[in-house]
Image (cartoon, rainbow, N blue to C red; front, side, top):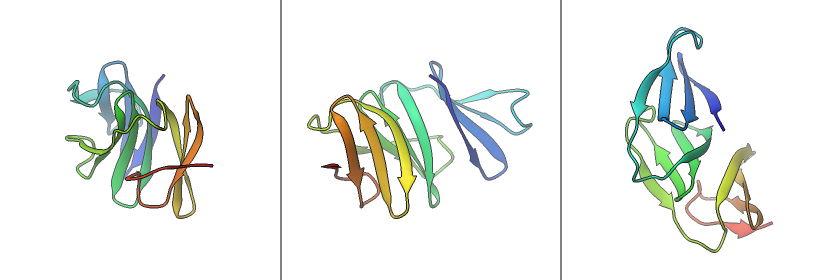
Amino acid sequence: MSQMINYGNELIRCSDKGIEYSTNEGIFWTRRYSGTSCGQFKDLIVLGTEIIAATTKGVYSSSNKGISWGRRYSGSSCGEFQSLMVNGSEILANTDKGVYRSTNKGISWIRR
């Protein structure tokens, strides 16, 4: 799965290679992050000035265009995160255990 977002003057996407970016509307892509500590990236959203990522190891955030990532949530009670969506002031997550919501930028989750 490859998810792509607009972030400033860049397109940023997650792929099986990690996080990649393009400054020319997707003609050329450059790898920005290829670490394995976050797991495999599944989905990206923009929340304010941050990028929030659903990964196979939980939810991570980046405040520097995806160059580095910090763990936001890694509990197992929600299951594996598949996709994220901003819904007003909350984040919705589709997981293999159902739909969850967060009202604190992905720090904690409640089953919807």
